[in-house]
Image 1 (cartoon, rainbow, N blue to C red):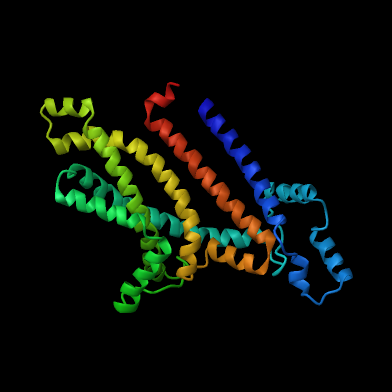
Image 2: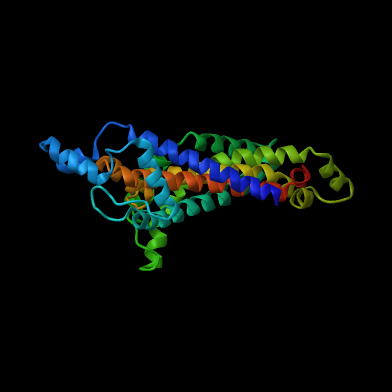
Length: 313
């Protein structure tokens, strides 16, 4: 229980610090939302009146306090440009980004677990060296470049999958699944290459542990000993990497959404930056930051559950 309370307090403190840093950083960037709305020909009186309406003429600390108080009540403010409530817009886009991130992680895990285990089990064979080399090459490929290559092969040349777009799951599940295949592959294969290296390293480590030799000495076959005793022990460090990668995938989805014209948080963020719609930018960034913090805390808690040595400290 003490661990859970400590993690919850750490999450709260980190979220408060991150929210202030995000707000302060975006507030001092060049550009005035009032000038964006009224244009360059607006007079000083009109600009001053609009700044007063927006509240951007008040001290930074007062602006932050109002914004943070609104966040506590689920109010992200009102867009300077569209005059829509920011919270519902972010909620709609967040669901799309979550589907993309979860699909990317599923692809990464399905690819990396067998590839990493085989690369470790065959580390003295040419097949193991080939798997290791492929995963090393995959790390160097950016997700957006993998997406462009996948579009060229499967959409342009083969015509088997759509090159972009997004249909909500509730409207047409088949179209939704087809449109997410290439974006999830572009995210997942790159992350899978990274994860393969960690799985291979973790499995190689347990292959030389005494408990595995003991299991072999008791008559278990190598494959059975690895599945029964090796993989559960190798899963602990891999789980930590998985949590970090889910954070990376959430942020990386911002770029992939642009490549595949998916209306997620990335699309909303880039459009809001172009429009200088600061309240939307602040809302999207803080949602992504809190999501990453939550993923890291959940990963730490799972790490404690899986490793008895940590629970005894």
